[in-house]
Amino acid sequence: MILLPAIDILAGQAVRLAQGKFDASTVYDADPLQAARRWVQAGARALHVVDLDGARTGTPANLEHVARIADTLDVPVQVGGGLRTLAAVSDAIAAGASRAVLGTAAYSDIDFLDEVITEHDGRVVVSVDARAGRLAASGWTEQTEIPVESVIERLSARGVRRFVYSSIERDGMLTGPDLDGARRIAGVVRGSFIYSGGVSSLDDLRALAALRQVNMSGVIVGKALYERRFGVGEAQAILDGHA
Image (cartoon, one colour):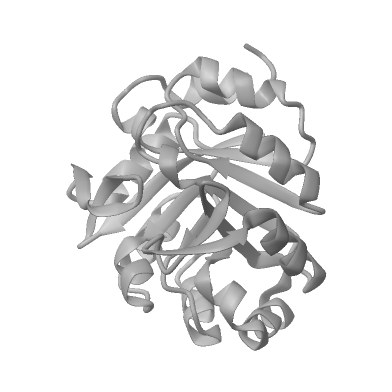
């Protein structure tokens, strides 16, 4: 597994939200590139970038920052937020994204999903964001009653092989990961997935690694890194099985 530091961009700044709430944001870096450079210099092998403005409006708004990060740093950068058309996905990839993370549009527009998989097959990731085990959409602002397991099964049948699973209740709260949720998701994902939400300590990472789910390929961490709960290097050592 690899550690992916999260860089959430809102109004051009690197921020963290609490439970996905836009009115509960904390600014950590005035320039997202500063955050990206810090994590890569500390040993990050990949980055997870979210265009929060794009997630809220449905149209990417921070691709210039994605381009600056990708041009400056030699690590893969997966990017999500507002990627709801084939053109938007292509623009993100042209800006330097190694993978495009789809959200709402992947569930609501099957034709769009088919187009993106056809055009960018190996670079497609779908984010399945859960609140109480049910899918949340539109930048986490809309709550559905659809179980996330059924969403993953349906998307897998359409050819999706890479997922991000986010526990919204735990996101930005430093309350520990949703181990039961991660285990359930591992049971239905036929490809691979990255876990996100609530990681607050090295022990949390040890707990995720101890699940020994071969299809869990990484862990996204945000606030714990920004709050200096632990460093990138020691976290990656745990996920590598060396600590």
